[in-house]
Structure formats: structure tokens, C-alpha cells
Image (cartoon, rainbow, N blue to C red; front, side, top):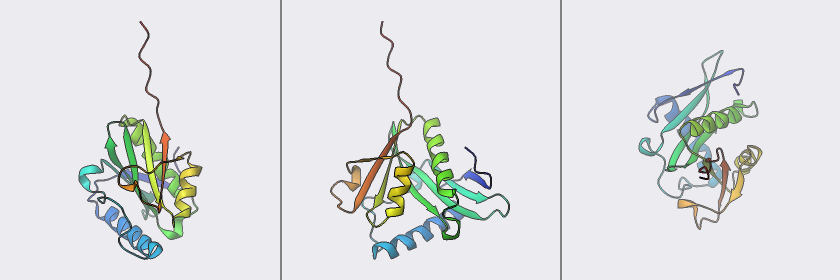
Length: 164
């Protein structure tokens, strides 16, 4: 579903606008968590982020938000770095980014998407739950991390092999 006032573009992880949005997100998270050390495991990098999207306002060209997919395995991707600038929150930007990420994941052959939100990110937890994501046990770098809340959503079901 297209958002009427957005243009969502796929860009390389190294894109300077994307880097600025991610830096703003990290500053906000550091403020919320009270530390810059709030991400278990390795931070996302170009090598493991095959998809990174930026949402721009159509009329002004202003970047309003971003999000990406990290490859976990051949059938599973993780949502990373979803961020919307404060003045655009509540306007549907994050939902449009999520829908675009899901479409990209489906097109790439992923069947499941996972996500994580820290316990102080109650808005993030509500966002994933409203998007149809179900709580799951912590996975990967989040295993054993008390402040992590993990989610998953099946986006495609592999067809069963035909019975001979």
C-alpha cells in the first residue's frame, strides 16, 4: 500500500541521508536507555543489511524515516534501524516503512521477519504488535538479555511438496 505523501527509496547502507537518520535514532536511544551501549551483538553494517529504505515526503523531498533488513539466514530477516523523525510521528510513516520492508523481504524469498525492541521502547513494542508481529523468545544476540522484547511475523508460507 502506497502512502499518499511519501516516496520510499531503497538506498545503499552508506547513503549519507540514511547515516544521518541512523545517527539521530542512536542519539534518541542513548537518551532513552541512559547509555550508548544499548545494542547486544554486532551493530548492523553494509555487509549484512541487503535492504535499507528511506521515506521522503513527496512535496518537499524531506527525509522522514528509515528502516532496513538484516539477513539472519536464507528464510529469515530482522528489521533494524526503523526510525521516524519526531515531527512526522503518528502520520503513518513507520507503517509505510514496515509495509515496504515486508514487501522487500517477501520479494527476496524470506518467509519470516523478526524484530526486537528494548523494554524502554514501549512505542516500538506497540508498533510491532499492531503490525501483526507476535512475541517470541529472544533470538540470536538478544538471548538472555532481560531488556529485550522479540517479535516475529510469517510473511510467506512455503508450499508443501506435492504428494506423489
